[in-house]
Length: 151
Length: 415
Image (cartoon, rainbow over all chains, first blue to last red; front, top):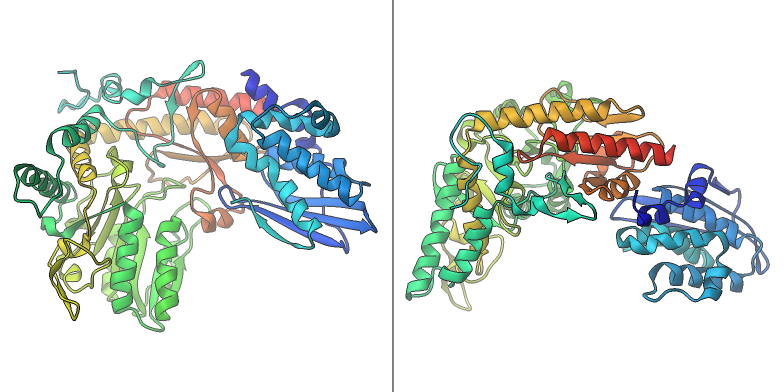
């Protein structure tokens, strides 16, 4: 297997794929965001339960590849208990990690925690949309409820 | 002259054939390309590449309007291409073969032109559950416009049309049966001859989507007696951007133009325009001249083979690949019709098709992963998508072995 492929399917990614964290429906969420990738048909729904300014709970359901599912799982870990402004930073960090042309700053790489494992996706342009799907859905949920397409 | 693999000997020599396709030598990382995405598009033999290149270096001009030498040469080549196509599918006359961008545009042409003229509220358009979006959406659009209703022939678990329901579906309300000859997602060869007869018996016309059949089967539109037949050049070893919609002259002659523009008119005034006959009426604007010439070159290339030997090779290759892939624990083949062309769709327990596709790409193997523009069919099987390896006559059993070995790696990575 090539180095690139090993970077893509790192142990953290495979672990979150096999044992997704915070996966499942949520009773009475405060907002819901849906993400849809029309090219591959992947669908993902993010549920948020806000307690004032904080994410008291977050869950996701959906179907998709190892990258989209592990990214969603990593996302829930990253944002649970965080304030809205911290969540917005987390989203900006992931976008920087996945789509910026330059190597992301060390501060960003440190801040993202385990989600650093998604960095390997950078070398697979066709798969970036898989990794960003959950985060787009989260962004939609933050702005109230709604649907977002990655097109 | 380079040696060519296409010759009339009954024996099929795959090694010689591969020499005709320069792209097959492509290196993907440390691997030689294994191209198993032929149902998406086929690769092009040197003869086609040369024909297109020759057109642009020696014959390029606009057709049907210049009085100069080159325009005459381009017009001749374009018109000869139509004759080649007509012979290839055994159309009664070349004017029954309209050059379009591909099967998709061909179906849109019929749905729009014939559909708007002939469909009315309560009429039915019968499709099958294994149609490509290209043979669903144009009919939905014209149904919306006319008040016609779209009905669907169901698909069995094994990937065949469920013909038990045909009696109740194929009523005199049906005005058009639009059906795929071969399923792009499953490989199933449908019994279209029988369906065409039964549709005609209730007064319905039949459009056959031949995008996936023409690369593998010999098609005779007169023997089939279909009313319309659509296919794409790029899936049959020709260039992209060119395709054919065949229609019986008696239908095409009555149909209004699909697009307006130059080349399709007799006389234009601001009060009224009169249209030319077939095929010009349906070819507004400057057509894809080089594409038509490239498609004709692809057909000439194909016709050098002994079709029986070629079909036997393809069928042996599919059987070999099916055994190799189906033997892997946790892999399930989607589409197990007894009559199939070289399409091998499958799912693997716990592994999404896209992940399969990425790992295979890392081994130099090109397959398609996803819904294959057949979302209703995927829903029917309750799956998000499949991984699909699709074969052409230049593929080998060694490549099928490489596919199977790579799938074992996929399984190991995700277990």
